[in-house]
Length: 330
Ligand code: NAD
Ligand code: GDD
Image 1: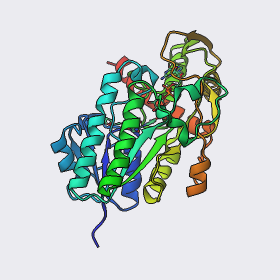
Image 2 (image 1 turned 90 degrees about the horizontal axis):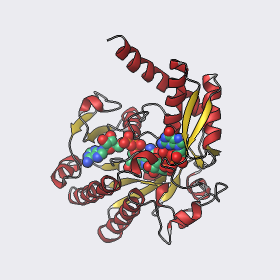
Image 3 (image 1 turned 180 degrees about the vertical axis):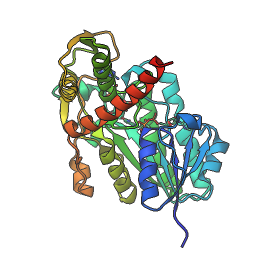
Image 4 (image 1 turned 90 degrees about the vertical axis):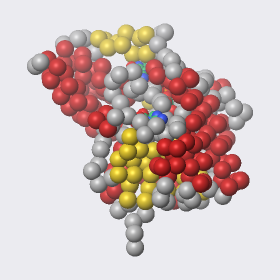
């Protein structure tokens, strides 16, 4: 029997790379497509079919979906708060990727389609306080998502729903809450808080600095999901009968100051903090209500923040030293 063929759109990125690794391990025939030149992909697997193409283009989507059973759409122009607050048009243009992939999937007879949505779809009024009530799926409406990026995600969720209802394409949608881990973006402007704080602490330690900058007052809250939990959740949601968008995130809430304490503890340093109150901050509080995913799939995050951050810190330390030791020796 021939192997099932799957497309990982955005396979050169953080989550796409980890997902491709797992799908290959599970015996799938994997096609990865990403717009970045291949030497910039976070992970490249020789066993996969690797293609550089812009999935905003409809023709590229047709080719990417040709002969494929399942599509995982992880491709988007995205990043942490520093990126999404300053690149709203670019974020919204990702609508072309999901729209054209859905059209191509329908045309090519794809069996199942996964879309990576975000906790940024949730109504801002539900995220005003730091001691936020964990967000339930119904809190996305009435709609008041994150400007730019969140609106694109909410619209694309609905496109998935209507392709399912009108054309019978089997779509599944997960709302990821901040995902972190090795092989994620850790510098350059798109990095999220877990990687950014690791990099800042490492930089201070390596250069003998005594201070780091934290965006906001540090009292804002988030939950962070380790990448291995995320990949397990994606596969479970794709295999499930869950029709509506569902949370996929950790419910271990932490302040950004708490996250910084944790990283300093892992690094074995104590640093002074300056708080940049004009830096991009996003909502004051965000946490995932996991009642639904627990009920439907028995899924709960298995990796505690401390354990995941220790692994992430070690990986970023290696990357930092490899990059800056190489620069210093030139
Ligand atoms: P990432 O930036 O590492 O990966 C996305 C990949 O998509 C990148 O490699 C990028 O080059 C590629 N891409 C962008 N435009 C493309 C195009 N036109 N054609 C082909 N490829 C294109 O991000 P990630 O963290 O792996 O996120 C994956 C998905 O999950 C995205 O849809 C993102 O919005 C969503 N998400 C991620 C998080 C998180 O915390 N990482 C949270 C919520 C939602
Ligand atoms: N990125 C970053 N860098 N954030 C920092 C830093 C820093 O150096 N210092 C403090 N922060 C604060 C931000 O101001 C924000 O209040 C909080 O840490 C979390 O920032 P991010 O990790 O960048 O993003 P987010 O949690 O607000 O949103 C992310 O998660 C969503 C899903 O939950 C983004 O990645 C979205 O794209 C994603 O959809």
